[in-house]
Length: 452
Ligand SMILES: *Cc1c(COP(=O)(O)O)cnc(C)c1O
Image (cartoon, rainbow, N blue to C red; front, side):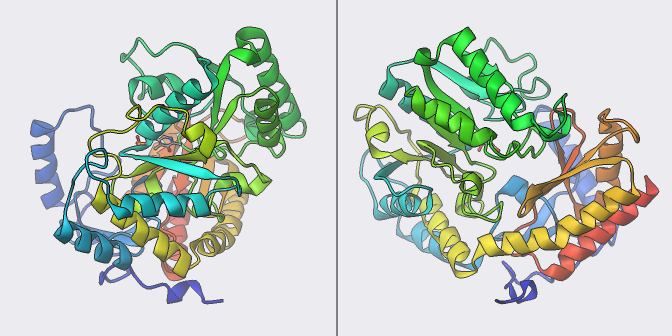
């Protein structure tokens, strides 16, 4: 097996952390002033620096600072920014043609992406796909497909779930601030049930899977009626809710309930999919074969693309012309996806994600022993997180989390926070990051924790 340091960088950028100005530096400050004047305030910013170039495991800003990237643009650039195969294939496609609209004149890259999705997603049944522009659009379409297939209307989702920002997906998303606040009314026929969140389950983690599944099933049966449910939509590893790994046994029980009741089981793998968790898809961890799977983020190395993939008979339920969109499955985005998938296969990125876990998790656990502010360490592969609490309690500490993130940013480490309570720091490095940079990023985290 090759070592992590053999991984070629996504571009020619020096793979180093380099802080040469205050963060943000003067050029970022002046661009930020222009942003404030021209861009709607609703478009927030995690780290107030402007990107100039990015590749491999680093992001360089307009002031010449180079940040170790533990965010991948929210789990998107898993193959690295401007990865060679992505640039090569997308460039060739840009020169051939940029758009025809698949509903007007189809093109091979669209079909080829759907063929790859059929091969790569769990299950050996006949599969078909439809392509879209964003994750939210994919989730919406999964619901449309499930409704027309089952001729039912209700959709069941889970506490801490995140599925997007469009009207239907806001309804599916659990957290009010910032995703929903003031934006209602929301789409009807959406029902939320408990998820097995081991760290915060009231009776403790031991019986969490069983109790949470029993509560979820009971609520569906009593409050909705299983026979009215079109789809159960769940992230096999919950992203924006705080990188929650449902306790083992929970997902299989929910999938079984769906199967027994003719409900379409939809795995939303938009964040957890495409090698991120050390497997091609997170639901493989417990051998789950979803009826439909939604993908986006990591699929195309940074170009906007999303997909719904699933059982052919379900996917074919919608009438011709019932699904689609002007740009869905844009040829350049499809070419980029084929480049990203080629890279994932060639470099065996699921194995890289597991190597990242092997490097990071023991160090995060050690930090948790030394710093009682870390209440939990969790996640799989290169989708890892720490949950920050007031020491000696489980009370969420979003202020400490924000301060820690800021300290990391100032020392040249790009990290993101997340979680229903805003108290989770998540780590999503590009899967091609070198091991030295990974360790250096953890050194920065350690020093920022000590200053906290
Ligand atoms: C990001 C995300 C979405 C929404 O994707 P967009 O491309 O931002 O619309 C949906 N589900 C999950 C699990 C996500 O992480």
